[in-house]
Image (cartoon, rainbow, N blue to C red):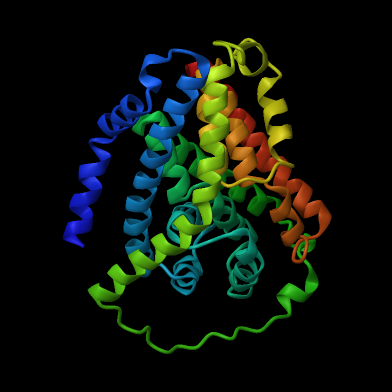
Length: 330
């Protein structure tokens, strides 16, 4: 483990020099056209993002051994509405989640007596704020933007879940969900050793990186083409601050698209570079990641259509408000 850590730091902190060496050997350093700029962007960004992703996924894999869905459910039981929304949103960051697990998690939370609004806060935060999104934002934009994304994502999850809870929309949950009886036991949790936690970190790297590396390569590839060939400030008229309609349009475009953070964030970074405003770009990214059409189709198994429309409407409105606020600030 120590050797791997040392190798990681050696490569990461010398990545710029290694990229320059590759350019010198290939002869591309003497070329100053769009093609060379695209290749340079691609060669540097792909390994940088993959290295950062590997490190953070490993650390999060260890952290997640302290947070199972069962423990998360136990923490949220019998909490007041707003406190429950806050806890659910924060726990959503650390709990393993994907669209395919939305239905069993939803059922488990509801049958445990966790309020609908609290459950939906968890389901909003979990896919939108995860280690892949955080590390890609950190690597491509810097820690300030990563913090902005996490804080605003949490705000959307908390407020949206709270509003849904106050509206008392339980009648729009499929009846069969409430008829399921609890299958939990009170058996003591198996003790996990440090070696087990480290092994979980390695397993998380193998599982997650193997699933998203291709999205990263494709996303950075598209971004590199835009980096080299799209004129400066091209996106200013479409996704810039002056276009008041850019935020709602970006959200509407983003909802039917399906991509994870690994695929969309490298593209968003180039959109900003070419003139798109930060608020509009973040709104587009949140809509793609947090309001995907496939997730809506999966949730249709447990939620009636009015609930899905209300859910998307409230979260979408929150994303647009965040987009406008950041366009004003930045």
